[in-house]
Image (cartoon, rainbow, N blue to C red; front, side, top):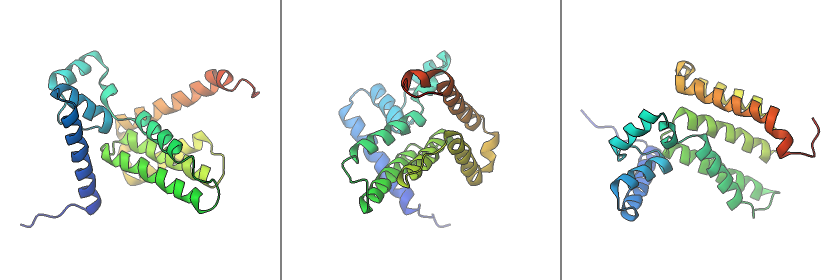
Length: 191
């Protein structure tokens, strides 16, 4: 029986992930700390200390070491900041779009493409498309569209508890922001 070769993209992602893990292990000499750093930065949990993982599970904070939309939001913000010098008109605007979109999706795939990360990647992609064509998006539409496209990709995620909780958490944050925090963040805008 022949072994099938992995797709070039998956092979490249695996090489990049291994390089990141080796770099972290080279500069972080304590194995427990290196395993935690790997889990926090790219979602690589193979080297995570089992006792530490159990302690996080027992205290109910295991989600802290999971890659989530927050991580992708930070990547999105960093990529926007790094590309801020590119002109906002003409071809440079589309180069900025490609750089940010590629960076977000590469990180999402490196992090294991978990549903929460994919949700964020799809949402940020819609936001980025709206920015690139100079349209103001509606966050509720963006949330619904991301769910729709992810469910087209894998309809069984509809019954996945992590998928459901991820969307409920984001919806809760949006509603909380809209009802409580907006007046403090944007004091000069009237409702």
